[in-house]
Length: 250
Image (cartoon, rainbow, N blue to C red; front, side, top):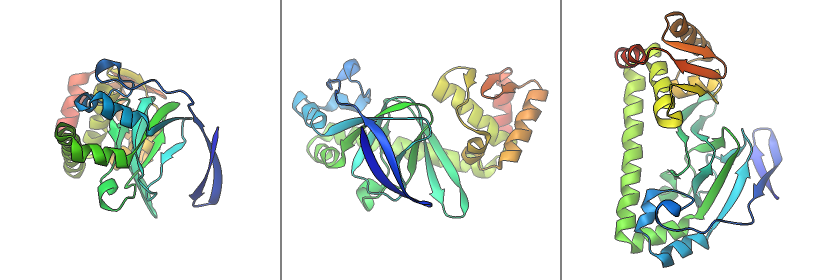
C-alpha cells in the first residue's frame, strides 16, 4: 500500500493507492497487457526499457488518478476499468473531455510544453492503471521513427476528436448535445445500446455543457417520446435512428 499527500481545496489529504507488486511482462502484439497498438513498433529491448520504468496501481471508483496542474512525469494507460478525463476551472463547472478506456494512451500536451498535466483523470469504476516514465517515452520518440510517427498520429486523432466535439457543442442545441453523448457512450464506451451509466446527471452535464436540471429534463422528454428508457443507472436506446436524427439536427 502506498500513501500520498495530495493538496486540495480543503487542505492536505492523505490518500492511499494500491501498488501492484507483480507486473505482467510486456510483449508486442496481442499479448501486451497494455494493449496500445503502437507498442508493436518497439523491439524487445525497447519493451524491456518500458517494463523497467513503469509501475501499476489500483484505484477505487471516484479516486483522482492525475491532478490538473501537477507535474506530468508519467504517461498513463488503463489496464482495466474506466476513467473520466476532465478540465477544472475555478468558479466554473468542470468540462468532461472523454472517457478513458483500457489500451488508450493518456498524455496531455503539457508533457512537452511545461511539464504539467493539463487535465485531471479520475476513476469511474475500480481501475488498474499503469504509469510509465515520460522520459522513456521521450527517448523512444527520439530514437524510433515508427514509434514517433504513431505517437504523433495518436495526438492528431485526439486533437481532431476534440475539435469535432467543440464544434458540435457550439452549434447543437441541448437535445442534440445530449443525444450525441448517449450515442458516444453506446458506440465507443459500452458498445451496446443498453448500458449502466457510471456518470451522474451532473457529469453528463459536464460532458455536454449543460446544467444538471437540463439533462434530467431532456432525458425525461426522450423517454416520453419513446427514444430511450432511463432508470438510473440503466440507459436503453429504444429508437436509435431517431436518437441519431436528434443528434444530427439538434
